[in-house]
Length: 329
View 1: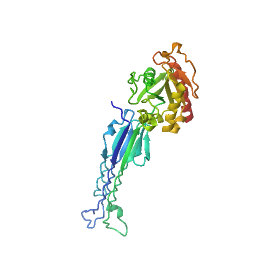
View 2: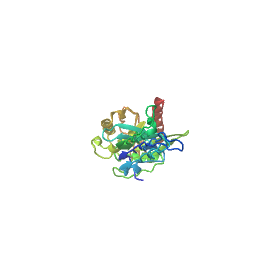
View 3: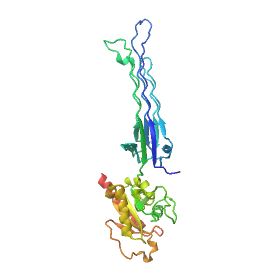
């Protein structure tokens, strides 16, 4: 399935139905009173969270969506039938914005949670509503209210405990496949990861966490270069950031550049706990770095190919995740 994490849609909720003007006619009641009912409410347009959904592909090609109108009021003070709502099931982590202003409409983070994007208009009052001691035969009614019209942008921000950050060919996909059952595309050329991937990492004692891999970041990604900036929204929800840097590079410099790109994208990303995994240590004789990097965060040399320090990495990440969870309680 093709991954889709963005959709833009024009929405028109249903108009409310008109109220009715009517007077009841009953045998032996020569002057029946008003009995026109209210119009029905127009249909809403709604997002609903579903753990069965993984992408926004179903929304990407729905450019124009119009909900059903409410029916007019009926005799006997009967309210018209409401328009059917349109409900789109979306993955957890979906956020909606008003397109022009980027006003945040809300987010869906739980199974079954709903978010109304466009509200249907209320039905108009029928003439039965206008009856009073001084107005026994009202002939007024209300038209239904128009349904809301809005252009929305809908984004998916993957919900994961750990987000992988690194340059192309740093070994992020290999690491994800080694730690979890995920099967991302892996090759020996840059940008093999063209879309985010998720994997569940398991530990002893029935512990587990979710890890997300995004396409590699390059220098000046925040200016639109490369692919990584397009997917940086996915690490906004991650609890911990795992920087993956190859052992045969200038580790401190690459870390500095990656941190700079995140800072340029969103300053608050750097408030998240960070861990550095120095990857592909199997390329070095004896798994020993010539010089240990001077970093301000925990770091660990690893090899996804041979399993070197992989269990230690999982435990280190678990410690960092636990800190964030404890802080949230």
